Structures are given as structure tokens and as C-alpha cells.
Figure 1 (tube, rainbow, N blue to C red):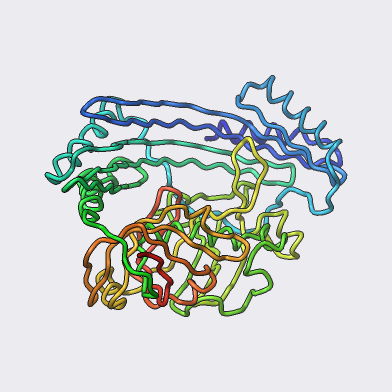
Figure 2: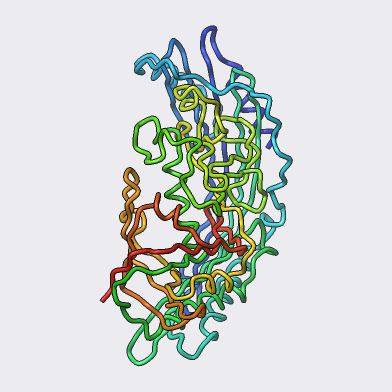
Length: 446
């Protein structure tokens, strides 16, 4: 890691008078193994490394990147970034981040053990996962996917404005998709587990989740159209959070494409709901000590007890909005910084998943959604998405339901939260969801 930081500092140290210069250097490696019928169907091992150079001079910005850390290529990349700046459109808000006095969190996100896992062991895990899914229930007739994957990455940012930081992290994951059949009907179900290292993964639980989700959907039918209370499983809640997080970005607000613009300080959600973006939480795979511009990450309260508290900003949008950066720049070495959430999470409530179902009384438990990104209007917030899950009757799970859609607006969805679960579940993208009960949702079925 010190090697990358040294390289970034050497590049940033070449700034000319009147010029701001930033270097973002990164490298990583990943492995993915997919099993099929007891054999390896696919095994991918990849390594990547590269540098992105940003130059700001006279209100113009230039950027260039290269997929190598070769010193000669880096020199060419710097020259290209400077050349691009000459032809860039002037913008008074361009400029690199500067140290803001926020201390970086103390996080240890790198597990050396991940690098020591033999490839043979990774293959065993994928094959064993497939075997466990197959043996999980007599109605399981196949396994669509059974995969193991891991990754390790490190990055450094240095600027001529005084930033010089580096970090590294590892991750591991399991994923299975089971195919269940009964009486000529087939259903699928997915199981996923993520963590920093192999010890944090649960092979049996991942297989059992895939089996349970597939078999419990057998016999699913359309439900009649109606308005009812909907309970989102944590994974589904996390998927919606990704959409909501985008609406809270400073970039969307500045472009007039967020339904929450000009509503800071207003009550926009149920008092039960608190939403934060907290990259300082080591439980999230989105955790990091600094953002893509090198500013220290921090816990950002976006919605506090239903009140809109903040938008996400990088340095550019903060300057345009007359605000300060929330250290929400995301990027890779091949791209300039952009605003994005690192680790969105709903503050857990005090009720178990069973208690949230009991609160719903009669309704629908949603275990998966389809067409989420195409079914949501990110400007108006209106959405209509296909869902499947289980009816809730008297607070208990009942018959499976499929081929129905739910429709509402995200603004209304936030206000209609009537129960928040304590069952925080982390996803591979760094977000975390809980069981969430929403009243009076429109369901279209038979």
C-alpha cells in the first residue's frame, strides 16, 4: 500500500505553477468459481492496476487514465491530462479537494487470509455449495448457479492540494440459485452471503436460503388486485435504498432531477425511518477510510426520524451548492469522481422479522422484485415493479404469490412505513436493509 501511495505522491508532486494535480492509483485481484453438476463450469482469476490523473488549471479540467503502473506510461498519461485540460470547457466550480480537518476512521478492512486461500479450496467451496443445495430438499431438481468469489483491492490518492491517503480491503461471497419443481411447476430461489473473509461466510445457511426461497414459492398464484400492507424483506429494502440514495445525490439536486430538492429540513418520511450513509461502519463492504477524492469518510445522516437532513456531495457539487463535501466521491482509476453513496443503511428498529409480519396483519411479504431500475422513475419517484413473495394472514406467512406488481411513489413509500425491523442484512454492494412494513400499497394481480 505504501508503494501505491508513494507513486501517487510522486505524480502529484509534478504539479506546475498555477496547476492542481491529482493522482488516483489502484490495483486489485479477484477470483470467481462457478460449479455445475459437481464440476467447475467457470473459473476466473483477474488482476488489474491503473492510474487516473486529473489536472485543473485556469478553470479547466483535464483527465486521462491508463491500465498500467508503468512509469513511462504514467508520464504519457500526465501529459495527456494536461493536454485535455487545454481544450476543456471552463467551469468556475472545478477544483480538487483540500484537507478539511476531518480525521479518517480507524478501520482494518484487509484480511491477509484471503490471499492465502488456495484455488483448490475455492473450487471445493463452489462444488460443496452446489451439493448442499441439491441435497436440501427432494423437490430441488437443479442448481442454476453455485458460486464462490473473493477480491482484494488497494488504492491511493494524492493531490497537489495536500491530500495523501491510501487504503485496502478484501471481500468474499457465496451465491446460489436453486431450481425447485413440483407437479410440473418450477420455481427459483437465491441464497447469498458476503463478508470480509472466508470465516465470515456460512455455506450451509446460504444453501438453505436458496432452497427455502425456491420451495416455498411452489404453488404460487396471482393474488387479486387490492391495496394492502407490504413487508419488504431486508434484501428488497436494500435494493430500494440504492434508488433512494441516487435521488439524494447533490448532482441530481443541482440538475433539478430529484424529487427531494429544496426540501432540506422537511419531514419526508415516517418518524420511524432514519437513513444514513456510513462508510465508517466496518460491517459494510462499502466501508473505506476515505472517498474517491481522498477526504476522510464520515457518517452522513440523510434522513433522521423522517426529516431530510443532508444530500450527498463531492467537492464539485458542494462548491456549486454552497455546501461542504460529505466525502461522497466514488470512482475508479479510469473515471473522474462522481457523487455516490458508499454504505447506505436504515437504522434498525427494535422488532424482529416475525413482529414486523405481525404488525402487517394481512398483507404481502415481498421476497424479490424484478425490473426495479427500469420500473422506477428517478425524477418523479413513481414506480411499478413486478414482485413475488408470500401472503401474510393474521401476521403469519401463508400461500405464495407471483406475477403481481406493486405501485406507488418512493416519496409516499417513505411516509407509509409502519414498522422497521431489527434484522439488518448487508448486501454485496455495501448497502444494508431491514424488514420494512409499508401500508396501503397498490397491488395489481388477477
